[in-house]
Length: 291
Length: 250
Image 1: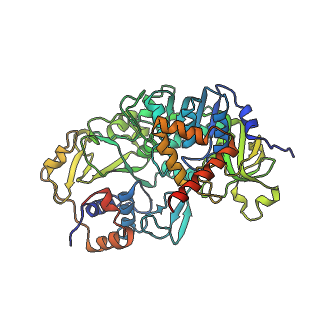
Image 2: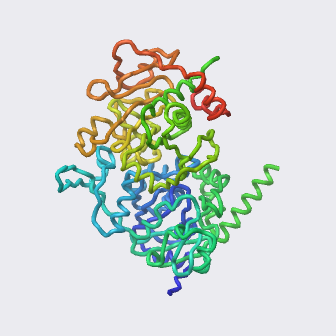
Image 3: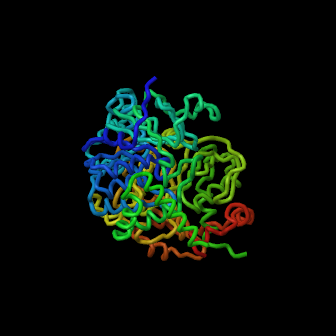
């Protein structure tokens, strides 16, 4: 079986200007943040990002990587609004296609099944349709003749997802409470990359966990990257919870341009190892301050 | 015993779920969560309630508490199945609700360059054409109750009818509970109508706090007070830290 191990920079090298990139996870939960940080360091630009949005979206918008965003929400969960996404919208620096969150799943499913659209009720009557002239309806060919929304396939050039465990062949496992839609992101994409907390032998995947936790199999994956704490600062239960103090500092800095420049300089100007060092120093400072 | 406004709201929010039977109650926010759990502990034992993450809870913990019994697993993909399947009553928040029953949680101002970007439409479009839907407004004001929302996220009755039978077939916007009153959309041409004012609030106050015409048909009754049993459940079981009185000050 093929060995699909890669580096984060190797993954980013496969992403070209103008591509459509789907990012797994949900809000501030199990986001492939190490891959996002690698993208921030690259010179890739003009991306269309498709995401149940969290800090991945905010960071990529702030770095000027995003031309267009397909989204249903962007949120940090414990902090409802994402400040970097807000400023991108309020300065009209990105184009948006806003979808209902169920439509979003249906669009990914259509792409996964290689059909141009799937019918749905969600979206009808709302301004999701008003602001998105590419959305069309379809009339049922059966006796009911209902006119439903034809949710277009959300075809992706690249999918980036983060899993708790994987083997080097691309079989990957989530151990937390929700698979989110990471399997659909992979099925909807031409190139599929998985970052993971830990690469283990295939047999180890099911040594302590039920087989139902194996969300991705190797035919859904092109590359595997080992990135311990690679979802930081989002949740990656049960390996770690959301880093709430850090997220709070992120959101506070993001709301102010000067503070944001300092935050970027401190946390995002180096590589992934430098990031984790800076986060460690941040926490040492925090516990020092509270003593 | 002095009953706080938040406790009146909790009972009114509980009443939203009356006769809903064995469906999923999906409250968003603090007082709707108290309301749904209160319903389950009183008139609606068959309701399904979740931890807002991925568990269907087999018992009824206090706010922020963990369930002692788990009766099911409901990741987001399954929530979407339930939305489409219909056995659900969602109580959403609203940055704006308008006279026609449309709701907005997406953005304020011009869509191309909003003055205030909010969450995004989330599941509001799909919820409103598939599920019984109510709204919770903790601070009734002319900025929230408006003539026309800036971005229709949740769909009101008239828009659903205009969009055609597929949009209207399962559409069921039920009520709006605010810190001042309970309203529905049974006014002329499915417009907003006052159905009760909370004790101590006048019809004039509700009108003054609304940025749109509110239909008033004859004498408006008072919203009922919580029963002694409900008060005990709210105060001792569901919200012992009195977080409710922070969302709606006494």
